Image (cartoon, rainbow, N blue to C red; front, side, top):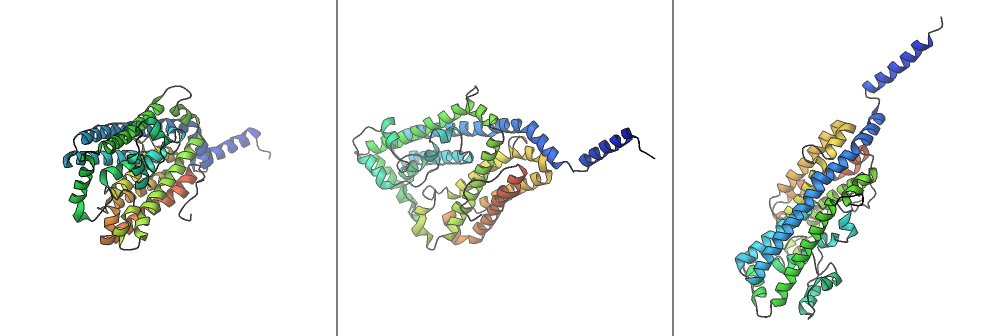
Length: 372
């Protein structure tokens, strides 16, 4: 007996519905999630992570300028301590948003000012010995080895020495700023702080500019391309923490005290807090504010992975913070804790490069430095 065509059509439709209900529609769900929520995701990133991140950096650089100016006018151990604290606060604010290596910070060539740490004392001495006014024109000619966050670190902290010599090192910095011939040194540190404040303020302004040509509008309009860049930056940043911060110190041959200059932020004692802030910034990108980040978007694609990713982020950050001392100090005394933090951060790195990227439809395109 021949079946009614309408009945066959009904059965076919029923099978399609059943396939959807039983989870066979992963591709369809992915397409829906991307077409419906990607715009919202990118807008949320701008509103909840990028704009607040740069606004916080702008506020911290302003505070840094104020206290550096006060220190220059009255160089004492107390005013130096305030300047140092403000420098660390600015560093940590910049680390919270360092995952973003595209947009205005790249277009304006500001990345080195906040991220490049290999300053050269000899190059800075040339600035100190020069008779040229330290103005915007002169600063514009200087390379990354003589300006930016880490030129300021060198001038405010000097180089890391034996912890027992901390007081004498502080006294030495105060003395350098107190001499009759120290006027130019005071002008130099103030100019460096003002330069950072100007750049951070410009970045905050760029991301709050309205119109189709504003950074935010371009970022949202980029769609999948913007998401690709974000996830690549995220994975690259986690790799940086794992390999170039934690594992780098683990691989230094003893005695580490002879190699402090090779450890980023060792002079300021902020090597651990800097690494933790990098991961916290990555976590903020993932979680957003009130569930508005990558995590919320990922839940539409792979809810179990979203939950697992959240846990891996938290585990890595707890492990890094648990080291409890600057990395260069912790390795000789608490090597097991540093090794554990490396393993946890390495697991987060692998997650970002594989499962997370795959679920979000992203291909990791940056050149990895760890052999992956």
